[in-house]
Each structure stands twice: as structure tokens, then as C-alpha cells.
Length: 316
Image 1 (cartoon, rainbow, N blue to C red):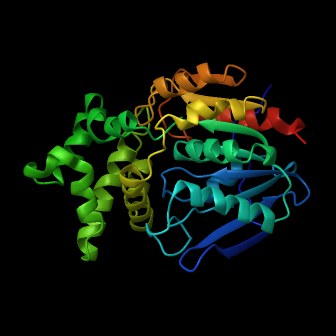
Image 2 (image 1 turned 180 degrees about the horizontal axis):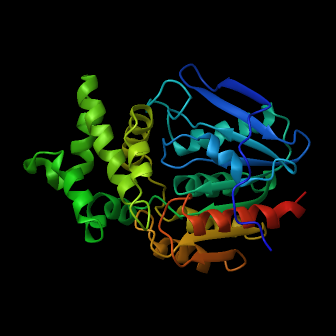
């Protein structure tokens, strides 16, 4: 019977801080088998950071598990920094880390924004990829961003009312700019309050059934600040040109093995986007989880992701 549960908790066998320019230093770690098949975990957000649980999607006896916190996120410094923070630079950072660790080719594993970054990296460096495991597809197009800011209220009106309610009614015509003004305020209390409101909104909409644990984690200071500032920054300033570039360039990676895992009731990254990617990439193994939303920790999503990493054990 295929494995469906996470692997037991593990600790890294190596950690480090990688300076990538005069401003940003990235946290990275390696777990599992030092001589195993390399897999890099790309966290969501952007800005959410990685956690110890993310190590557990992979069999540590087989995989060399590489995890990093992207610019401005998690344990990387400075936390929440938006200067010199673009998709192109994140792709460049992955190449710097790959070379630093002596990895020739690696498997990419990314959900939500992590799927965006995985696609951007793979389309730039297809020769460095063994394959892709993607979840909760997000392509960072304007309709997807507007859905997040305004239209998730169709399903989660209470959460959206709290999110919008943090902003005076006179500024709600442009929630992104109104939030950014507060997230970039010189007043730390103003920044933190806005970050918490933004992050809790996302957390409240991320699971099919209510998850008090997920909402509580979303409100934690470091997580909220990194997520909200970096996410708002990317929504404002990092659109692809053309907007559908990741779909247009799928031809560069269609030869690579891929699994796409999508919750049927994902409200943060609705299934329509994953369906567009599937139609552009018919060779990919497309798995719809019928009883799940967005979070990787929902039972059906978690099981599908573990099963994908188990099926990919024959990659070399």
C-alpha cells in the first residue's frame, strides 16, 4: 500500500548562512542521506519561510533534502526585506546554492508561491532539474492577485471582513496599496498589526475545514511579518512579462517528469489555475484531491505529496 503519512521528524546534518549580496543572507540546511537524490524544498508565500515539518515529505534514507529560506523570509536576514528581492534574484540564489553544495541536478518541490518559483527556475535552468512536484498552483497573474485581495470573500466573508476592516473604508478601493503603506510604515507597531491581519486572513482561507492551529501559526510575529511584507511587495512589483510567461514557457520543461497536486476546494489558489497548467503540460501527472483546500498539511494533500516523492525515487 502506498505510503500516505509524513516521515518521522529529523534534524539537519548541515546548516549554513549564504550571503548572496551585500544585503541578503540566506539560511539553508541539508537533511537525510548526504549521498541521496537531491531535492530542494521551495516554500510558499512568498515570504512564508520553511519549517521542520517540511523535511518530512521525503524519505530521509533516499533523499538529500535541501531546504532554504528565500530572501526576507524565515531565518534569512534581514527579515521582511523587500529591497533586491525579485523572482529573478530568487532563481539566481537557487543556482548559487546548488553550486555551493555541489549538486549537479535536483528535484524541485514547491507549493503555492513555491510552485511559481519552481516553474520559473525550471524554465530558466531545465538542464539542472530532475523533475518537479508542485502543489496549489499560483502563476502570479493579476486575476489571481485580485482574487486573493477581493474575491475570496465569496467563500470566506468573515475572514475578508476582518482583513478589509483593518483598512479605513476610504482606502478599501485599493487594498494592496493601503496595506503596503502600513506594512512599510516606519512605526513597528503599525507594520506588525497590518502583517498579522494579512497573514491571518490567508491562514483562515487555507484549509477546507477550520484550523485553529493554522490560524494561530499565521499570526506568529516573524511568520506574519515576512509573509505579509514580501507577499505584498511581490504582488505590487514583480509581475511577469508577459503576465502568462510561466504558461507560455512550459514547452521548455515538458520533457521533465512532473506531478501537480491540487485541492479541489483550494480557495487561496483556485483549481482553475492548476487546470490551465495541466492543459499546457499534458504529460504531467495531475492529481486532484477531492476533499482538500490549499494547505499542504491537509490529509489528502499531504498523502498525495508523499506518494509523489515515493514515486520519484527512481530519478537519477
